[in-house]
Image 1 (cartoon, helix red, strand yellow):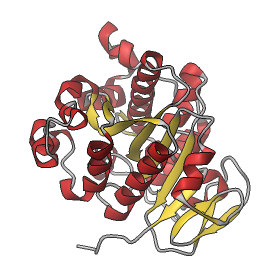
Image 2: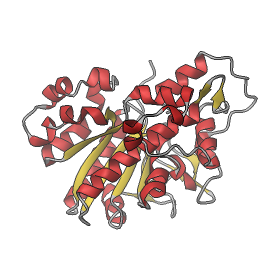
Image 3: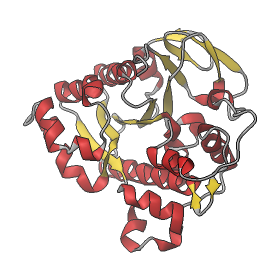
Length: 299
């Protein structure tokens, strides 16, 4: 669930073995207690089944709904599309912010929402293979929801070399332009550190010369800043940005959502798509809502 860079750094270094890796879904962060998640949507507070329409209604007081996915899992992307359509149906003016694209490539993602491109043309125009690389067809439900509803797409992410730079050289190496898109790099959130470590199988966030937490916070802060800049341009109450990103950027409210609040006191709701079998226990603090769907076959 963590970004590829972090996993590559782990495999390239001799990290100490862990006797028992923590379960990322069962950390004691935020709302206390656990809930069993079955197929479909579950409300973390009540523990009961819910619907995309109910989640859209519960999001009426926020302008950011974060949906954490396991990349290229078709059922997760179908749920994202259902939530987007539910918000549109309830009269929200929806923008879709996507981790998949970097902010400097915004012009390459504009064609889909204007109706000037087919989904197949968007794959080429957006430089999907180099910008993201995961199975394009898995994301088709999201792209269809965007095209059918004429929704604006925002390229949320920072250029990927910045993440490696932050991990290896620190924020002091960022120049004035980089700091406009990543205005700070606060590494003091111990809850976030615990989430990142759990996603790394219990390994420490600092390994050799690389600070993996700094890389993750660069991503989260950069995406939050892009979302905040969008909201400043479109400050209307009916507006909502659906943020589509890996679950590691959303879990326990410690990723993009934490930085939205830290940078601009922006509240949000979250849906965590669970990459596991149904009827397992998860911490209530993991998210506001959960989704379980069919997983792709193992390769």
